[in-house]
Amino acid sequence: MQPTPRSLRLHIGLFGRRNVGKSSLLNAITRQQVSIVSDVAGTTTDPVEKPMELLPLGPVQFVDTAGVDDEGALGDLRIARTHAVLDRVDLGVIVTEGGGWGAFEERLLGELEARRVPVLAVFNKSDLGAPDSSELARLQLQRVPAVAASSLTGAGIVDVREALLQLAPADFFDSRRLVNDLVPPGEVAVLVVPIDKEAPKGRLILPQVMAIRDLLDGASMALVVQERELRRALERLTRPPALVVTDSQVFLKVAADVPASVPMTSFSILMSRFQGDLVAQVRGTLGIERLRGGDRVLVAESCAHHPVGEDIGRVKIPRWLTQYVGAKLQFDHVQGRDFPGDLSPYRLVVHCGNCVGNRREMMSRIHRCGVAGVPITNYGLTIAYSLGIFERALGPFPGALEALGAAHV
Ligand SMILES: Nc1nc2c(ncn2[C@@H]2O[C@H](COP(=O)(O)OP(=O)(O)OP(=O)(O)O)[C@@H](O)[C@H]2O)c(=O)[nH]1
Ligand code: SF4
Ligand SMILES: [Mg+2]
Image (cartoon, rainbow, N blue to C red; front, side, top):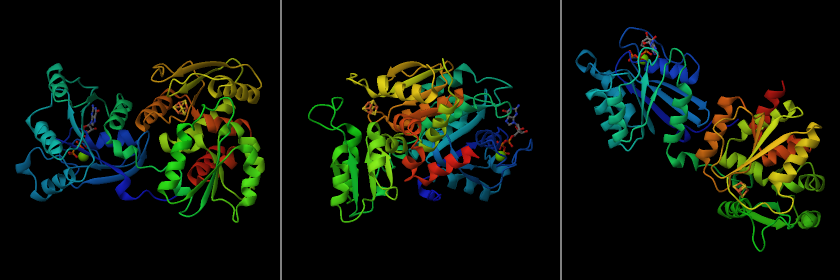
């Protein structure tokens, strides 16, 4: 897998007084012993950096700093190093304890806000005491989100992750590419768009429009055809296309018509990578294997379109899944923002491509499923899996194939 360039990692700095548990919090979030913890104030002397994949955010770099409350007692160098970290973080976490938010924390908050860096207040050591209502009210007034957590017991650590997700700058979520990284400039992608009675009259749907626009942005070419024209379209090209992208509903026919040497995937799998987390949703797809008769499956769509004919979410996905499992399943459907708070009744969540939603919201849903232990997949992944062409449809994405291989071991 390609390492993520340093600049694309979201840098998250941990700041606060000595001994409040900054290093412990980092270890609890990462579930690793990254930073040394002790009851001696001033344990961390130099910034400790930890690059990692933090679900649900993606590639981040944590920077644990030295506590610099008692400045007189500390070397200038240590203070300078902690201050230098303020200049290069995208998100700041100010760690304190219940009743501990004071002038020192306000100063740190001011330093971060002056740099336009979003801030999260974490009241650590919640096992010893909760934050005062007055300090919570003060932070609320300043619009600084606050979370109580215990690095010792793990309480609230999930909320810290969720709060980091909510605070991450929007452009961190928008820097992904939909398709043009898979089609070099000047090369052709064939897009297969069935015009059936479910297709909206007189127009294309958003994922198709987005793919065409993205290919144009990348100076690559899009050849858009219906499935019955695909064979002829491929014959007319003097070289095989760099990629074939199909509507998932005609996956099998397209898989049969496209030579095995040509990479092939679907619009909704592209959307999973662009608007969600392909690797997490590939892992979630394997949850189909554990479905049994009578299990409940949630089918979630980000927009409230009117179901037409053999609607994919209401008719086709339930039909394919039922056939694959070979027993009756119970399906619930939600649209728009109606994603249930309690996911415990479900054995699987099948989500649409989320073309109209934002990625942060999708990542939050994936995260909530992870916390509830409910696998989450998406339309295209489910269809490819239940039709037996999962690996083929993931061919263009080495990271996803790697995760699939690891899950099968
Ligand atoms: N009870 C309790 N103790 C904690 C918690 N988190 C940290 N501690 C303890 O607090 C002490 C300080 O923890 P550190 O993580 O080293 O604190 P730090 O903020 O990194 O300290 P410096 O590096 O010295 O600035 C250690 O003895 C930890 O075991 C917690 O959530 N609950
Ligand atoms: S948001 Fe979901 S259901 Fe609505 S058009 Fe996009 S992919 Fe389809
Ligand atoms: Mg420390």
